[in-house]
Image (cartoon, rainbow, N blue to C red):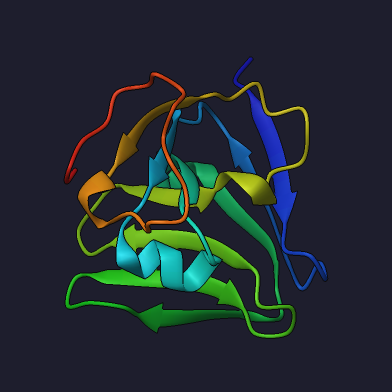
Length: 130
């Protein structure tokens, strides 16, 4: 039986489930993730076909670059999804998943762009880009 995970935004205007495996979490320190989350974004991913949106009443998509869209709740502001044009995967902000997730942060990406108000001291791999 494949894993089943549920999640939502804060106000529950967007509710979703994932049937299947989620990737280990990436901590993304790029400037776009910082602007949408207020800090770095902890992201997991799954195959597009494994994500089922159960309620999309408040889901909106923002084109943040030529090839990337970000999904968010237009009522509570929840940062939910990140997807790249042509990719077979979609990224989900790990904090929107219901516990227990069983997930762990595997590495930090875009650390060259991280803000100056915190240090990375967890010993996990760090990449200047992705």
